[in-house]
Picture 1: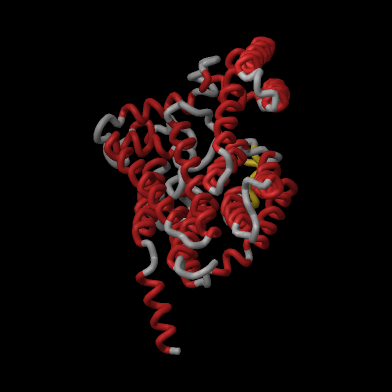
Picture 2: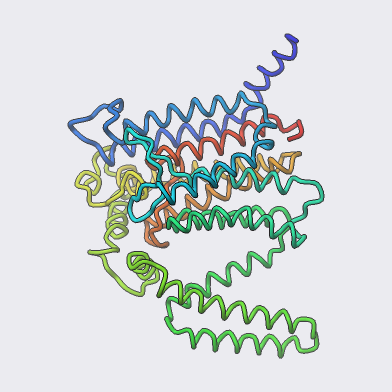
Amino acid sequence: MRSSMQQQQRGFFFNVDWAIVFVYLALCTIGLLNIHSAVYDEKHPSFLDLSTDYGKQLIYIIVAIVVAIFILLLESRFFSALAPVFYGVTVVLLMLVLVVGRNVGGNQAWISLGGGFRLQPSELAKLTTCLLLARYLNGTNIRITDPKSFMISLAIIGFPMLLIMLQPDAGSTLVFSSLIFVLYREGLSPYFLILEGLFITLFVLTLKLNNTAYIVGALIIVAIIIVLLTRRNRKLMPVIATGLAISIAFVFSVHFLYTSVLKPHQKVRIDIVLGITTDIKGKGYNVNQSKIAIGSGKLWGRGYMQGTQTKYSFVPEQGTDFIFCTVGEEWGFAGATVVLGLYLFLLLRIIRIAERQRSTFTRVYAYGVASVIFFHVIINIGMTIGIVPSIGIPLPLISYGGSSLLSFTIMLFILVKLDSNRMGIV
């Protein structure tokens, strides 16, 4: 009995991937310092002042660390066994937020907990979707190449996407699309990734050209050329015809979505990124000021709490969605490179962890975590430098927000726990 307890303690201290823990703590610290600088209030300078965002963020970090330690003390099988329950609870919360949720910035995505604290179920949904997807793909005789398995996997990913879309929260909805990389790792044909790239191209062309007739005509010409080149292989004809029909339907769907579904401010943001219009004093103000802030930091930055864009609040949402421009302005290119380097190291470490697993559950879950973090980092930083539309998703572990921080903490430390027990069966 005593020997068993000693082995468990040794496992807890020695099997934990401390590199992940170090990067996690480094990013949380960087986030807290930059939030403090971005929204600093001279009347409330203390980090312990809970009336400030940095005071609340410190509490969030402390709570997150306690939760992380608790996760490491749990049995690894717990996460696989209760994955359907976690997913179900999240779905209920996503439905509940549509009824009693608090509307912030046009999105009904938060449930008020009192005392100025709010819960965003969509952040937890990313975690629970990864868990349930991993549990399903770990099942007996489940192959992603099987149409039934593929459709069920898409349903697991798509159901929370639909509920989040109703809030409407376009940014969080799009995050789930990154899980296609998980399915690809598990055997999905690379043609699906090519198709995804083609649909993105069609999406951009449809909005950029703003003429569906030209695009449909071009698709038909391309289809005719393919038919002529492959006319000896008649088996491809139905595939080509189906692809053409789906592509044309997609073009008209994008046009309808853009003209009849998207809100005016959402259309303007897309137009600005695509270069269709410029509005640096209106809807493009945030991005323009963000680029000015990042550029003004030059190589070494202006120094901690010395950013002029930060001090005079030129960039709205600078503690949340646009936190990276604070990094760029005050820490410069060097500081921004360090932050990006930490994220790169984290992602590569997660992939390494994924590939050394014996358990399909842990491998799938690890790739899910990597996909979500990768999407958040690319899109958030892309927003601040103006290469993607401003869709409002946080920078992992750095942006202000308890729901986001807690979600990413649980994500990472479940993975750390599963990896520490990788010689077992999950």
